[in-house]
Image (cartoon, rainbow, N blue to C red; front, side, top):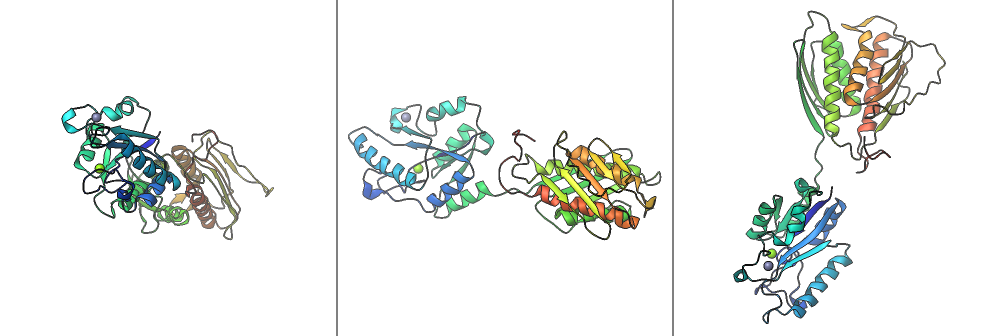
Length: 372
Ligand SMILES: [Mg+2]
Ligand SMILES: [Zn+2]
């Protein structure tokens, strides 16, 4: 959806002279910071529309010819720097004319108001006067006011600031109460409190190696066993990762991790694509126990039944649950060795692969289908 910036001219793009009429070339002065700010905003995919009141334009006191010469000069100046206005909307009336197009009245932008294909939530009015702010309000969009020499750079800064990818998930059932926070754009300061020491340690492997911030608090029915605690945490974590990714714009999407540690773990993930290609590459030729679930292929011969309080059966269950709620195709493989290390290597390798897949490297959707 198109994002518009409706921009006032005098006092906003060019300085307003003492007599309020920019009718001579010698009166043209740009407002501080306007060029670099508009370039930044253009880069951020905003489309510019100029909306200006020119009191009494076309009358003897402000002939059209004088206006046009200066106006074209201003437009050329901006165009020479790569800044274009898709439309230029001008009210030529005086207040006493009582027209329907003088800002903050809506006449000039009527076509936009009747068009429902643009992104109102991320479109704004930028102007120097109260009437510009009133105009934004009447249009039902946000506003930025140009008041001083730092206004433009502050406006551009706040309209282009990257929002952190954060999600908070609370999942409370009879069996488990889970509160989980994930921030894909921070790292460290992680907290894990699941009641299972080894599982805390494994979640820490994911967070540390994915380079994300993760807080997990779980009160589960451990008096029964650890099944629900691990399964539900995985479901909540997958959901949180998916939510934090938002529209997934710009992410790498794929991740993989090759041999690491003294046991050898491989992880391939085709992120966020439930019916995606399965990346399966098995060059080992060794006999493996293969667990094949909807979103997960796990090749592992665990050398013990349990690590800490965690049965190794739960490893596949954890990753398939996470893959399901996150929308992930996952291929994992681990060599034989110390069982603690086997499990740990899988969580670490998953974290490493996740780190790659989550990374933002542009601003387009990483799919030829146009959707993920
Ligand atoms: Mg103005
Ligand atoms: Zn008018």
